[in-house]
Length: 217
Length: 217
DNA sequence: GGCCAATGTGAATGACCGTTCAGGGGCTTC
DNA sequence: GAAGCCCCTGAACGGTCATTCACATTGGCC
Image (cartoon, rainbow over the protein chains, first blue to last red):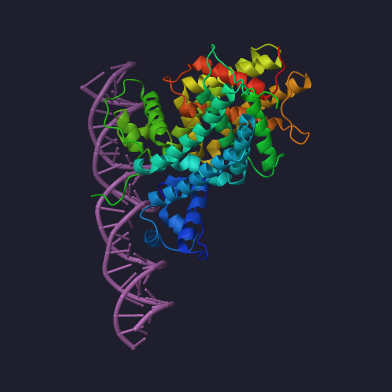
């Protein structure tokens, strides 16, 4: 009888077949799944390697440390997110409403479809060492600034009329509110629900446009 | 030189004076701060007890385990939240718009003012053992259902006209979107910002009313 | 003073952690 | 078939973990 009750919300993986992919990819994939299901600090290097049919030591042929592995996973998710957000806005023409709608739709579809990736990138970031957390935070800020820019522009052009409090607007707060909303679909969306990914995205885009007081087109 | 790099985003506490409060309270308070700053799995029992000027062993005179301590902290925050949400809605008269506005305002003010409590309750819940997580989830569902009820009622009475996708409404999704938005103010709100707590609450209530298409009163 | 219960101490227990490293197999290239 | 390289194994290292326990210490009450 063990004295220490293991901190395990989900069980550690049973030994698996050797993953046929190149080891770096196999490790990344296994780590990703484990982090998503159980959280970085309670996933051991042994767990990860067992899940792709290797032993602990082999990790260090491909990554410098467990910390680097986490950063590698989060950074690739986050970079891709930033890229598709920029792309969506750039491809939406010059109308602020179209830009905001395009942004929200792409953002929500991605957070539904790749909800596990999003979850890990958002939840596990705090375990990254200080040096490695900086570029992730920069990317997040960049995404927020995309939204702030769209809002600012829309207000200037008179197509948005976002709520004011005591006569003042706080576009940064509104941008954060919209982003929080969209980001956290990934926490509860499941394909079994009433709406599909695209429908969910449309719903969120509608709500966002209403929230910022978009004039009818 | 240690071989194991400690998973520490924030340093462990230095030894502290003995907390003058009754030990149960002192432990709860110290644990709460530690969990908020560094996350449940990396906070050790030694850390908690050092922070209130006791030694590890003394914890077990007051709590059965580290897990029970976490549950105790989260449950009290969550219970109080559920209580004030019900109260807010009950005290808002019979108009659906007033109910939704009252709910959002109370919810946001609380998440600004007690943002650390909210953060712990939301972030650390996943470390709770299966038995202890059930009642927290029930309380969360109850809060969501309050919102769903307000929305359903408002739609029936014709004072809300929330977005539809493909001719259908998903009020549960809309309720989740509103709640996600409000909950996560606690992740970034700081008293240094442009808006105070009450102003933030008013902003969020405005956005919520707009999002659900509330007719002017 | 003696007794009791509540509460604190700190060593001990048995386990697991990330990381290192000596050894060894199985390629390709000569 | 030898050499060289890449990659894997699994034991070992130095450490930390939650929890238990035999043993103080405390303060109230007779």
